[in-house]
Amino acid sequence: MDTRRLPRSASRSVFRSGGLHRRTHGGGRTATGLLATAALLVSACSSGSSTSATAAAEEAALVALPRSTPAALAPYYDQKPAWRRCDISGFQCATIKAPLDYAKPAAGDVRLAVARKKATGPGERLGSLLVNPGGPGGSAIGYVQAYAGIGYPAEVRARYDMVAVDPRGVAGSEPVKCLDGPEMDTHTQTDTTPDDAKETDGLVEAYRTFAEGCGADSPRLLRHVSTVEAARDMDIVRAALGDEKLNYVGASYGTFLGATYAGLFPDRTGRLVLDGAMDPSLPARRLNLEQTAGFETAFRSFARDCVRHADCPLGEAGTSPEQVGKNLKAFFEKLDARPASTGDPDGRRLTESLATTGVIAAMYDEGAWQQLREALTSAMKEDDGSGLLVLSDGYYERDADGGYSNLMFANAAVNCLDLPPAFDTPDEARRALPEFEKASPVFGEGLAWAALNCAYWPVQATGEPHRIEAKGAAPIVVVGTTRDPATPYRWAQALAGQLSSARLLTYEGDGHTAYGRGSSCIDRTINAYLLRGTPPTDGKRCS
Image (cartoon, rainbow, N blue to C red):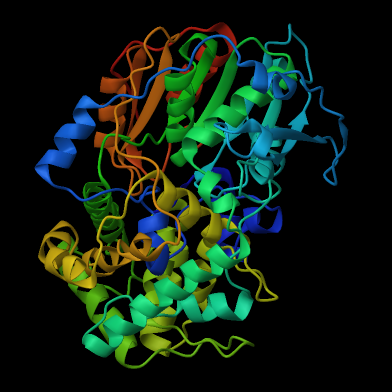
């Protein structure tokens, strides 16, 4: 599944326009919709949820790499970036090479796109601060240029060069491609709650078509876009920047990437902030199930807020969240039978899958709840699905010309390589429906079927669930939000329990991630850590 960060300050413009980060080649928000939720909302396709698999994950831990750099990698570590002006004013861009296959460095290179905005001063420069908005598949360069490089606290930008590298296979770094615009339109409208064998076959065929498209376009690269490889790339970038240690802020999936770096290179780990943390020890079925419950928690918060407003189309004051959910589910079922009009120039109508994606998109930030109420009102009372289509398009990073960013493609490529599929057959997904629907009566059915996508991937997974301990690393700040839909709070607790030097920082609130989203307590605490190296007391809570 996909987990991306969307700063509160950007959330309304993103949803209204269909994607701030899409326009700037970035990604900082959420998943790619129901059809890709297993590869998008959970941010890792992994193996089944058997007791033995879970136990094995609890025992396995990521092993640190040797401190010395292998001679075969020395040319990569000795690179000096040739900086040039980016298209965005105030930023510099460069290309840095990394080996396609770390086991065979002579087999070829991957070209990594890097961008930076130099420290503005005053104050002593603290080095580089790498940022990643998550996904996998979100463009770190788009994120730093659209938000982090101009919107992070001024005192942080004054002391750090703000740096981003698009991970291999993402955006500017040899992007994975799978389908063209019209093909993606068809893909996103596929029914993800099949009622019979014919509809089940249609969903399977959609997953096969998507996977075959990726395999045909990027056969070599697909085998080498894992999170471990992306973390090793970050160490090459660190060296090229001239930094002894990596300072980093990762959101959502970016926490998995950052924790992986710490596990591989604990002695080179500087000040790491992991915001909206993931638990790398869980197999995919468990990840998907727990995230499904996370979306239910977020939806119940939305439901309680919605009925306080006169324009809520899902219930009146006093209507229970359970009933609000039933009303929304009934609307989805109505769309399944008869999609709503949208006025879309490409002739798309609002299907159940697109509507569900639009609702899920708004769960990532409470700042989008008003827009969601308005979109639901138009769709439910006026048969106008245009508002929900806008939310869905922003989620998928679809532009006004019908083109898509490579977010969805890279997301699946990384997820399906990192861990084996949650389900291997439609029968397995069908048997899991009661468990998923118990976790979320509103979203459970679609999210269970979405977890089938990696079963048809053309490249076999190379990773497994594992713990990350990073013994010997400097203090690492792990941030969790209590009602986070995409990365449930329990995941932050789990990661903090694994990392030997973690300090858990809790935000009691709604939405996905916490830094830069309106809590002065969170921002002050993280700024103190980044600027003075002072980590919070473990267990500190903010609201």
